[in-house]
Length: 342
Image (tube, rainbow, N blue to C red; front, side, top):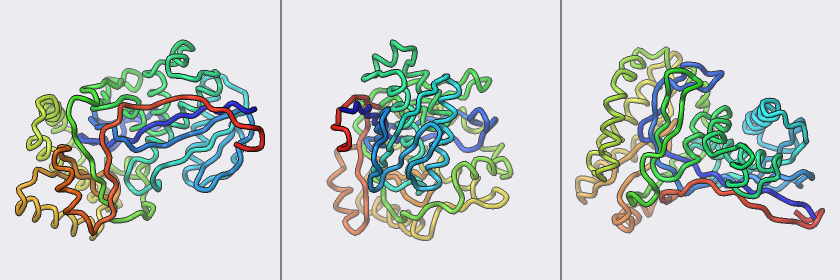
C-alpha cells in the first residue's frame, strides 16, 4: 500500500492588482493587492513512492523530472528543490499536479499550481494528513503561504477563503497576508469568459520585470493606497456598484501599464475588446450590475451578485464560460493505493 497526500488549493482573482516587484528574488511586490478566492482548484498528489504518469498531469521529484509540460515543469521543479534546500528535507518525493483549466492563459494557474505543490510536498515530507497536523509540525497557514509565495507571488492569497489582503510590508521580510472577509460575507460569482486558451507569449514573470519601464507605473503606485481603502469599503459594505467601478478602473489601468512597458505586453486581444463592448451594451440594455476585471491574459472575469447568475448565464449562451463561486480555501487529506495501481 502507498500513502498518497492530496492537496487542493484554489485560485484567486485579484481585485486590486499586483503588477511589478520591488525585489523579484524575494517575491516582494511593488504594492499591496486584494483578491477573492475562487472555487477553481489545482490538485497535487504526493507520495514517497513513484506515481505513474497520468494524462494531463505534471510530475516532479526533488531531483528528477518525471513528466510535465515544460514551462510548468521547470517552475515547479525549481520551487520543489528550493523548498527542500530551505527546509533541509532530503527525502525524494513524487508529485502529480493537475489543473482544472489550462495554464498560462490568465486564470492564475501558477498561484493554485504552486500552492498545491507546496502544500502536498510539506504534507508528504512531514507525514501530515491535515492542515492542523502541519501546523503542529511548525507549518502554520501563514508560513505555508509565505513558502508558496516564493514559487508564485499570488499563491499566498490562495491559502485563505473569501476576500484576502496581501500586505506588501516595509521590507520583503515583513510582508503578510490577512483575510478581509470570509467566504460567507458576500455571495459574489465570477463567470470567466474564455476568449482564448492559448499560452501567453509573454509570461507574467516577464511582465512583472518590464512593469517599471512604463511611464504609467509610478503614477499608478501613488494612487493605489487610496484605491485599496475604497475596495475594502465596497467589500465590507457589499456595495456592488462601487466595487464594479473600482474593478474596471483598476483592470484597465494595469493593462495600460502593461501595454506601455518597453517592450509592450499586450494581453488584451481583439476578442477581449469585442466582448467588453458587448458587456457594455447589455449592461445598459438590461440594467444588470455586472462588472469585469482582467488578469494578465485575454480572458474576462465577470463579477456580480449570485442573484443575477441565471440572467448572466442566459446572456452568455454563445460563449465558453467557467462559472465559479467563492472558495473557503485549501484542503489536505490522504488516500491509499495498491502499489502499481495508483
